[in-house]
Image (cartoon, rainbow, N blue to C red; front, side, top):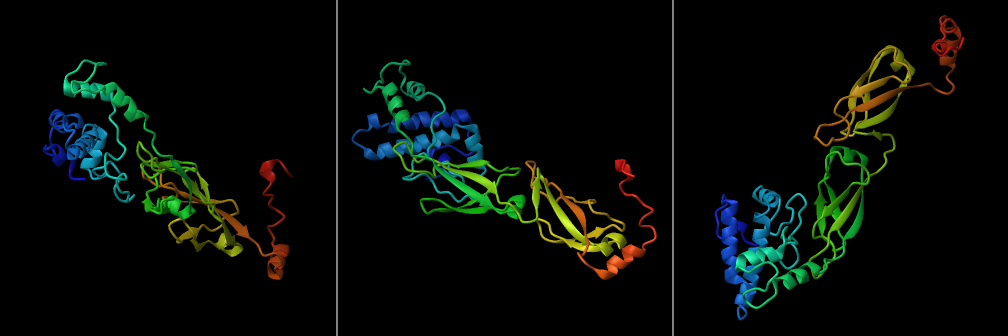
Length: 306
């Protein structure tokens, strides 16, 4: 479809009143009841109506001006969707009463008959009653790290079309995305694709709201003496300092290594240290047996246990 402003013959910065005025003029000129012997007029009428459906809606007009939707009202990249099958209005409908709109265009009283010999109320009812095609449901399992980073996901639809799906910031398991016009075909236009998002479990990361948690094994010498160790994150491994004298259960915080929040900021990663002791090490056993301060200190005293 051509540029919507060109279709209505107005400038891109035209006021809402100018857009409406242009549409009235063209709708009267190309209405099918005034052009019964001119099939091209019906196509022009549909094109004009589709353009007005978008440009008369402030939100859709803003999206079109920003290049987020195309002339048929379908999202542009990164989704990569095309227009609705067969051209047309891309599934958009007027938000008001179509009979009111026709009344205004052709100067009839509400509820009466049009001046060109047809019943606008009946036309409105028949237009609204045409069923859209069925919606098609999909479930998409998103890898844990990619979900945290909001990496686009490639989805192959039932009709064979492949699209790149942009993950919404702050999404949770079960979030459903609607892809307009990507469902089954129908007399009233195609249905939608409904994609339910699921975050795949990870073998060592767990999600805690916007944060990520990880249990990190460290050696006894690393815990006692302190060390620099490599720690996995959803963005790749990083070097982290283990403070000297760390015990199991100590938590280290890695800022900005969690999930992407709704405001586009990132949560954190919390690393819980777990001192890993070998099952049977003679040297470690001998050290423990001769350690002078071992029996003098009771780490359970705070629990009321002597």
